[in-house]
Image (tube, rainbow, N blue to C red; front, top):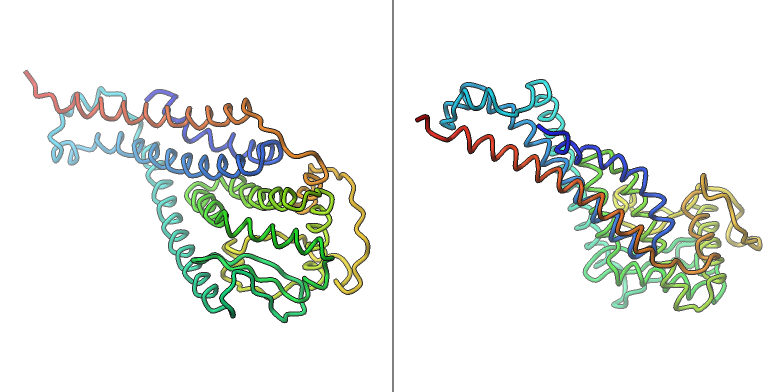
Length: 334
């Protein structure tokens, strides 16, 4: 087989390296769509190529030749991969399929549990305020999505920051952002090379909600303060969320590791630009809000799409080669 057919197995490496730069440079809505869709496409393409690599060598087995009525001389002289490569490809495909099936099962159960949780929340409105003293705010996936805000969080924020927080969570609910994170995580389960892409998808949905909240508030600095204060409040006294949904990333909200005083004694947060190379997600979000709104970068977006298209071309080449080999082997001898 030609080298091009291995591209779907190589491109995910470049996708992992490019995920964070794309998340930082593209508008968050565009970045979210690009990362989630690319992760899904690359996972499917890499799995398809693994399957064809395995089948291309398996047809050399005499029993399979006989069952498929294939010409042994044609198969033997054809452009097929070696048996060791086929064994490795087959093993990787089986592992990917098992991991993907487990991830689909676990996420389906978690989404169903989230729907039941959303339905069981008190009141008929979208926003539910609980008496919990721990600061917390999150969006629960469901039909419809529900927003939960604790009294502890309301006390930790100013009136303007509360409006920003509410707009942020409503953006999660309106956009069904959990779908993007679910797709990216399922793709990463099938192809572990895509885990950085899934991680950055989780970041870009937060940035997406941040930008919408900042637009509604008309004050990017206020939005940045709201994100910083909310993260500080939740890290001071981590709330007790549903463990299953939190582990699966269904509750769309990020918090920094515990560090800082209690919300009741919250200090004034001084906002300044930080070194983003090693920063966590919350500092990155704050820094992005302190900067001008992100601009469309059509060239960067086009280059990223081309890389995914190259992977697709490699998968098509693999399919073409395999089809050509089988078609030639089925030609009856003269």
